[in-house]
Image (cartoon, rainbow, N blue to C red; front, top):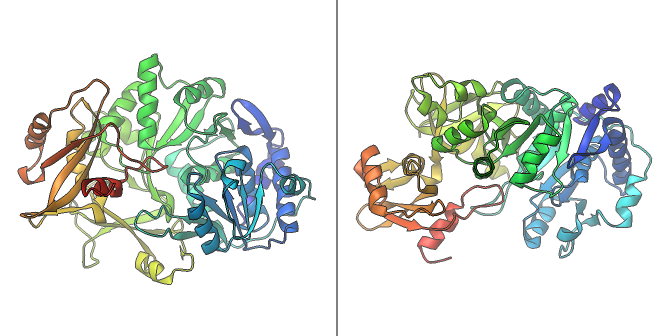
Length: 502
């Protein structure tokens, strides 16, 4: 069940097929890439790492970031990916908590790191020696042996390590190819989002199909570069947070471009508002698929595919565009009330998921595991509701629901309305303290360039679409909204700003 069997299989079947590209130039073909990973696996073992040990990777996107992923699995190790934008002290905490035996970094991240374990950088002799080690035979692994220890973003405290085994990631990849995007060897996945997060896991279904992996020369997300790669590499797929999608659409509109060269743009990781996906479809065509997942069940909770997105004649098209689609084939999804009972159609409750993609638990945290996993069901912390056709609409995180005068207000429904104003680029709604109502609705709004937004006009828009008690009582205009490395708006930062703590 070792995931590295997928790389071994692709290398045996198509050794001369291009595997890893940097920009449009081929770095390694499948045969030589598999050999590189097998030698690197041998070098890791020579360092003293044994099956089950944790190997941490803390670097910006790099071709050998992918090599380390597959070499770790080849050697039977557990990969611990770290967000390249973490502070060194945050990275050190994760290294300590995970019990990592070795961390591999680039020179930038390695400069100030006081690692509590062995430390290599890509530029030093230990790394070069590892690449010259004898190739290691592929290590046997069972399905539930750990493969990926992913630390959550930790916006409400210390991050937790979600434990995912070879079986979970294989099921994730099969669910992806079944419901999100069928892949063939001519396809190319470009890693413009951090490999340390969900984007890195896209390598699993891509290797499964023997497809190409593209690392942008810039190492990150650049709209012009991605459109150039779509033209030179072709059949390009990528994962993009909603903020990235908006940037792609704006670049295309400004430069008279369409979606030629792109095969699939998978979006997720944060809410994509209906107005934004409508603009994206109009500019770039039917190339979009939405996924809803979490680090605890990556990539495959629900999917909103090309069919529903392109069905302009459906009488509930608007509602479907605002949804996250239907349950992925790999899992079962339900919405429950406060008593643990399934909610009827249209009633909001907490979203839960179970299936072979769901994590085994949190590393060294049995209490958090018990709170998150109950009888196999993962409590997502998200509030949502199903329609009669099985489409799930997320309303908000359970902790973000605003309770004003005893009534629940879901920020997303207010945000959707405000985004109908053509001058609004971004908006985020939070609850703020109110002496009379307990909480009141506050909207943080970023205007489009050149737009002049009037709170009275926005208030009139909300009153035309929402119950009066749901409309924002406060507006704050910002140039842009604060976001984390994955494009998610930091509502914690907005709350702090409101209270004068930022």
